[in-house]
Length: 190
Image (tube, rainbow, N blue to C red; front, side, top):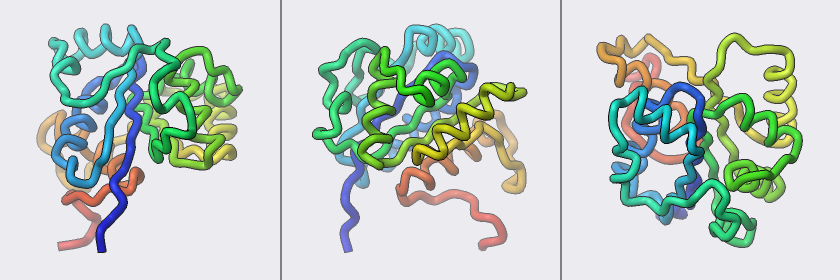
């Protein structure tokens, strides 16, 4: 039985954790037979943080469709484009707050608003710690609206040996949540 190919929005904000975004883009390239289209939007801060944390600008090298943060002509600014999944990785608390309160002042918050109103899948990989009550309430609001909060909390039962393997434990969970088939460590499976 053939699976319907996914149309995925990847939003990258300026929260620390560019490694998660990079690994997700790498994973999506490997999983391309399951994917019809990937649209990427990065905030200005996301580009700065990527360059600072990863020491490069390799986000420019991915073969996906990139959109400017204020491009409301991007296909996924409307529900009619039928993008089925949006992953915000990492998701800053400012972005989460705007989404929670319906403030669509850039393409990331507008796309999230569209995904939620269309009852499609929104995955927010929040990275800040600790959480204030405002953060917790915003996560609750987004969850009640149908979003999935997937904190960038690595797992260690796969005995990761490198920083990339640690970060991949989060990205593998995100890929699972997006409904893509992948080979990854499974608890207590051979």
